[in-house]
Length: 351
Image (cartoon, rainbow, N blue to C red; front, top):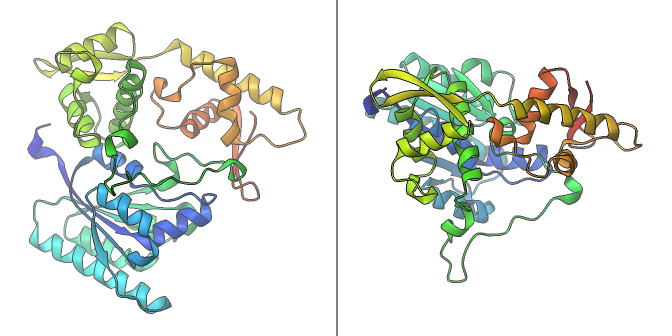
């Protein structure tokens, strides 16, 4: 795939719907754009980002979005449904205007659960635009997902972990005392081979889930740069991307095969025998905890697993979150996973 074949994406966020939906449905969590941005990076290049809200109600969120280069569209302060309708209309008008004025935009991402946007989705598809929806399960109308070409539930995205309400931490503003965001300290993390393994395997898995089929080395590198424009193999001690890939192959993190062009191999996550062992330990842990009086909740299960496997990381096996790993275990009949409204968490039982 050449650069010209990549999807050009326009991102529109009905921010009040997202922020309130996340807080009410996900144990008070705050909406974070990064999991959405990473999912879109696996699908193409985001060329415009717009968010709509009365920003006087979302001061901290505004700083987070600004750091992510989102254009904030201010909706005049009005009451109730009048303000909501103003935001909906402005967002729909801007999306349609962009569809007519920017022919190169191939995909529109509408982040909302509001069924009022269903006519917009249909109209964009009539204009031969692909439409991806993003919303919170509990606040997404049943009418909206079927109207889209693809719909992503926020809580299922890589990097979104539903937390135990009793241990929830307050979000700490990521601003330095002089008012400037310390982005490097907040988001980069240590450049270790372990972190590289997780980054590579989750990105490959994401590219495959997005329907791109076989993943070429060149496609992987572009997706990594879309996730983090500062990505460089030199940070991990490699002189070239090919050398980085060779190291991953030698450590059985990935497998490669000959691609259509010389020097651009096909890449996939290596089959890992340790994965079966990890599933087995998970099953044993759940069986052991099943005898206690309190229910087994997802938010505390990873720590229990690490008591048996201290270096456990689901990203090592290509899963973007622990929830994905447990769902894979459920598919294999090892555990049973169900959402518990009273616990505001997933309840886990032996399979």
